[in-house]
Amino acid sequence: MVSSIVSFPSPFLMSSPRFQAPKGVHDILPDEHLYFTFIKKVVRHRCREAGFRRISTPIFENVEVFARGIGDSTDIVEKEMFAFETKGGDKVALKPEGTAGVVRAYIEHGMHMWPQPVELYYIEPHFRYDRPQKGRFRQFHQFGFEVLGESDPALDAQVIALAHKINLDLGIADRLTLQINTIGCPNCRKKYREDLINYYTGKERSLCENCQGRLLRNPLRLLDCKEEDCQILASMAPKFENAIDEECKEHYALLKEYLTELKIPFVENSHLVRGLDYYTRTVFEFWSKSEGAQNATGGGGRYDGLVELMGGQSTPAIGYAAGIERTIDYMKEAGIRPPNKDTVHVFLAQLGHIAKKRSLTLLNALRERGINAVGSMGKDSIKSQMHVADRHKAQYALIMGQIEVQEDTIILRNMTKGSQEILPYEGIVDVVAEKIGVKKFDKRKLWEE
Ligand code: AMP
Picture 1 (cartoon, rainbow, N blue to C red):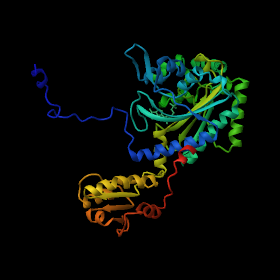
Picture 2: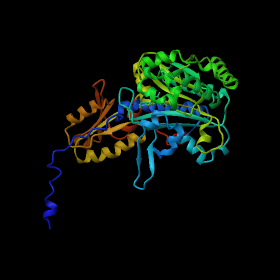
Picture 3: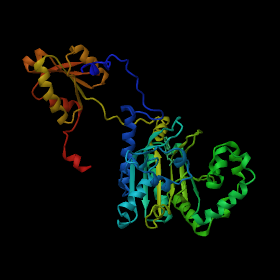
Picture 4: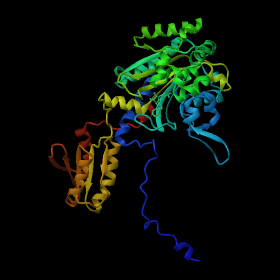
């Protein structure tokens, strides 16, 4: 009976596999997190300042939320969704973008009863089954904001201004151009769709395979195709200005007036349509000034019909989302290093049983005093512990061996100067705090945030 158990090879004897992160996804290592933390801080600060409140929607939703909310004929829904069936038979998908989930939540929680407009922001991971390449991943992060319940173009200008301000804070605004366009409302777009289909009919063979498929389903997308032949055809396509109605025209004119008032430079781009079905009127993107296929840091637009399409009351809305990984690329290109608050102030080296016991309480006391302290808890020699202190780039080391324990002293070593002094153990926390210049950690501060 025992044989069935012992017949399995021991897991320690099998050659162990080398696991790697799945294709298109990546770990965020500590150095990269400096950028993430900095971006989150800026976004949180600017959004809070403008009255936005944070929302998180689930990582996965009923697949219909995205099919309806993003549009069946979009690349995201057709090709890029991580959709699967749960054990209970529910069809769900990992969220490929933020707006559809926020709109679902707006309706589900009756946010139309809140003071309007409802202004929300998010910082979340998203998932798209994209072809992995530089700046394009299968799991990536976006920050974004949505304003629901107001149709005035002044709101469009404010959302763009908020995005622009964040770009300024991150030091990348001058590397980007703001591209804007209007794609009108469903009424004027209907006429424009017909104009486009008429224009492209008979020219299908000059279009790329993607555009041939899109022609009847989503002809506006043909305008922003990156293929050379499609671009040539798009440059001669009918212009939207001949189809746009008076109200949409005025909305666009006012947006431009407000952006000028806010001194936000922009470029009008009649071929900018954005990939998603739900946009109405204003669409915009921030493009890199340097050439490259994946060059938008973020984009957004107005989606006045989406809340109703998803089962809510008619509610105008506008939103924006930016890719965090791509934003980091631009920050790096600009030579921007976010502040590193992970510095180790003190490394505590110890030798012997009593020193180790003392170092446990000393580490606690140092940290309580607001000092970033790392301790070596192993049995290594002081020399090898000092190598570790070097690798941590610690400013100071505290060294406690058997002699120091006997004499109630401790050695304080300045790691940059290489000098050291023997000090009384009693009161050492205050001495170190003064040398580093840290203020006493005040727990009440946590409640002030
Ligand atoms: P979109 O709503 O598709 O325009 O996405 C907004 C922003 O998210 C883009 O401008 C990119 O910065 C970022 N983004 C979109 N898809 C990806 C991806 N697959 N990998 C990395 N970033 C992405």
